[in-house]
Amino acid sequence: MATEHPLVLPGDTIDPSLIPTHKKQPLRLGPGLRHVPPSTILPTVAGQLVTDLRKNSMWVEYNGGRYIPSQGDLVIGQVARSATDLYFVTITPYTANASLPHLSFEGASKKTRPQLLPGALVYARVTLANRHMDPELECVSATTGKAEGLGPLAGGMAFDVSLGLARRLLMARSREEGGVEVLEQLGAEGLAFETAVGRNGRVWVGSDSPKTVVLVGRALTETDEKALGVEQQRKLVKKLIREMR
Amino acid sequence: MPREAEPSLNERQFILQALQENLRLDGREFDQYRPLELTFGDQYGVADVTLGKTRVLAKASAEVTVPYVDRPLDGIFNIATELSPMASPAFEVGRPTETEVLISRLLEKTVRRSGALDTESLCLVAGQKVWSVRVDVHVLSHDGNLIDAACFAVVSALRHFRKPDTSMESGILTVYTPAEREPVALSWLHSPFCVTWSYFGDEGEIALLDATWREEQVRAGSCTISLNRHGEICQIAKLGGTPVEAVTLLQCTNTALTKVQEFSAFLDRKLAEDIKRRDKGGLMAELSAENDR
Image: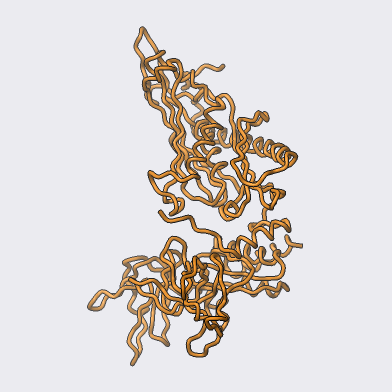
């Protein structure tokens, strides 16, 4: 994360000069901020205050807490069991299951739907999430009818990372905005692997060689646990590659 | 009560496949422990053990009570294990899971039944007053291999513990506060440690030390060996699971001995460091009322 974002603590007063102003669009508050009428904005968590002038929005970037599904998130779920026309999928352990209809896979019909065993992993999008209902998932884009990368994940290994790292990995420009470069570095070292990042703090890594999967997993977890910067990530990758050889 | 989170099929398959290729997820060797750390509290008898992400806290305490009628000369020694929901949502207070029962049984067998603590030395007045020593084990974070971590914590806590000094004069028993007389260490006979092996594969041909929580969930069997640094085995527990070749088991025991010697040396070093830290003005030797054996 870039350093120009100021650190805020719960209940801090936010410097008015930091609040974006826009002529037409209303101000949008993201996670970690609370509007106290008439005109106070209070942070509710500790983290970095990020503002987006173009979208006229602001939010607090923080790492921690548990995953709460929200619409449009990409998650890695684990099939708990199958019912007549849907799968029950665990997004996070020890919470209520989400439902994934049998037919919301690419090209699925009653006869061609994928048969998933309990314990299988799926990469899915959250289509419905609100506080009092169980979330719903889909593995196909409703508009195009294509999978767009979603669907069952075969082989590979799922690693648990913090929610903050998962979010940073999913950023469009994860190196500049998120400060994670570890996957690019590993790719540049000539390793062939594929990943799927779930907002629920799970990263799936697939490759033909288990050695590569273990290495990518170690690089990710270590980056996460030690909160490494870009330069340290580079060193870590070099070290791991040397160990492997 | 929520069931423990199961690993997905992908994880299950991958862990086993990687083990066949001599790979562990965290890059360790098969017979390598995660970094072991031990911190003693400010009070005597508090040991906080971290083994990777597993963390166990043990606290020893002592009070004067009446002995059991059938053993008037023996003190009372108890180990209480509690797995709270703090460690995993699958644990519930007041309803022991299988893991919890197994841990407390193994600790009991390893530390209490092996006679590590001389209970006769806890007797104050025969048939009337004895010390009751109790160790509470709290699991703060669960990432596998609770048994080894808990056993190490219990032994460290007891070795670190000091009970109040007492004296007996003309039938009057006096228990001194730490301000009056320096507390005395327990009469400790030997330090047993647990080493748990996890077996994978159809015939248990792959043996791992210090399995993480994920590895524990996919293992085919396990065997806990308790021994002290002289190689005296206190117990071997192989509770079900896959059968293991006798030769493999023998090799495991040999490796366990080297690990236990490392643990023992580590604990001795930590205890010496702690004594040094407490001995501020170098007056400890003068304050102590304990006789050298």
